[in-house]
Length: 339
Ligand SMILES: [Mn+2]
Image 1 (cartoon, helix red, strand yellow):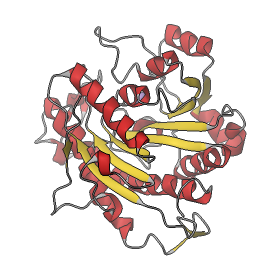
Image 2 (tube, rainbow, N blue to C red):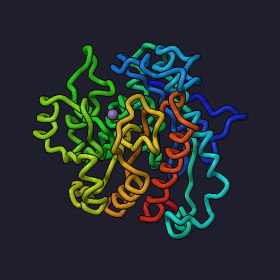
Image 3 (cartoon, rainbow, N blue to C red):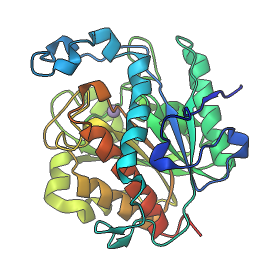
Image 4 (cartoon, rainbow, N blue to C red):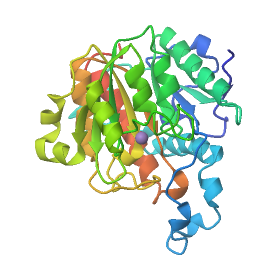
């Protein structure tokens, strides 16, 4: 299966102004940024007609179909790269969130591989191509950081870890995503944690930020419970604090972190399909990953479901790119990456 990349155009910024990687076979970096604009073949169930176009005039020109399109998925990586430039030229300044250098004084090599080219409508090929691309990145010894895509993206990503496990998968999400299938499709944004649970190389999981109505049905809750998923309600995170939740995350040598932007609080991630109050805050998200990085290696990260057309003053993209830099910083501070 051939993997086709769409390089970041010369006039567009790469993530944090990182050097471009043109071919995954030549990848030589600690961290590989890759956009994967995967879109599940079914629709979000909230009618986007409910978006008040008088209040959000930017949305006027967007039909509901456009908002849910592959083009919208592609726009997320573009927005994150663009907003990462807010930080690109001060990365080595004193960072109060890390009490010093963000990258711990280390030489951290980030490469931007561009976006994976996915052929419209050909889901089987898309899924295989995603798995293949991640496999190549892992074979080159880099940690993939994926700019999604909807939250179906982790299913084919995690299949690439067959020989790179075992993993504990940590999901940040308002929703359980444990449906066996939806409209007959098993690799969509409602099912990826169920798929992860079926993979022999996924030995445990924690699902953090769960809240609200519509997170999952009783049968999915029971399936996750039966699997042994550590389910952490958003309210528990706020009450116990990050340290209390870290104690509940299973011990593992390797962690894979998957983020649905709606798991974050709308104050830092308003640009999502399902904004839901009471979500994971900036320091909670940062400290969770810092804590996880101290316990084991971070084997990969995806950041999904950023919807630029629904964003407010680019806050979701600005803060998502800051969080991704914090994740890279967490790996540098734990000594996992950087010379
Ligand atoms: Mn999700």
